Image (cartoon, rainbow, N blue to C red; front, top):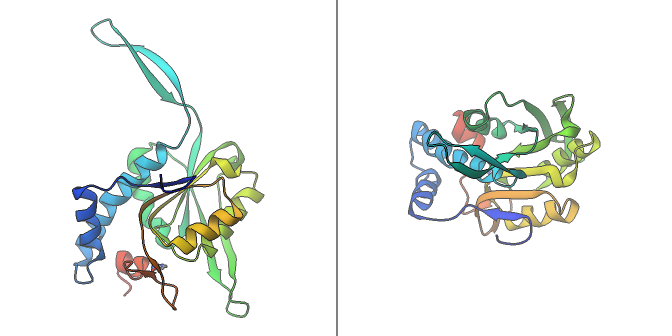
Amino acid sequence: MASPNVYVLQSNHQTKGLFTLIRDKDIKREDFIFYSDRLIRLLIEEGLNCLPFHETTVITPTGSEYKGVSFASKICGVSIVRAGESMEAGLRAVCKHIKIGKILIQRDEETALPKLLYAKLPTDIEKRYVLLLDPMLATGGTVTQAIEVLVEKGVKEENIVFINLIAAPEGIQFLHSKYPKVKIVTGEIDTNLNEKKYIIPGIGDFGDRYFGTE
Ligand code: URA
């Protein structure tokens, strides 16, 4: 754990290899999607590991006891449109029948501040743990606004797990200055933001590369 409530995916040759592939500017789009999806799947498993559980014992086919755990809570996903939608399939692949809401936030051209344009969330979201999905954490403005929407709907700050692929230190700091109890699960923490607010070394525009709108 890098700092309280920040969980960085354990780095090994597999994960480093996957990041090397998707960060390469010359990778083909189909490969970018394939290897991003592999990393997203690992991150979602890591995010699920932040949720509470209770101890449970089952009897195995040999008649023996196995002391294990079972998952303790209702969950849902919320993707931040558009890049966050790339993480929905990975979440559905590991959580059967999961409800997934959406939040769309865009920068207001007059004020330059992030502005909520659309939110469609499960009606009982305040009773759920929320896995919030967005692959890039740059300034943290958008995700912080999305968390504000969830908190206004009654979701407890400590019940939110933000799952993301690459984070800038500036974004982590901004998010935690507003919502320190939100857990951030990230793949790698990069160096900084450039003057255009892109993450460095980064990956470029994730949504454009994933959805082919470059
Ligand atoms: N969003 C992206 O897709 N890339 C960045 O580097 C920053 C925000």
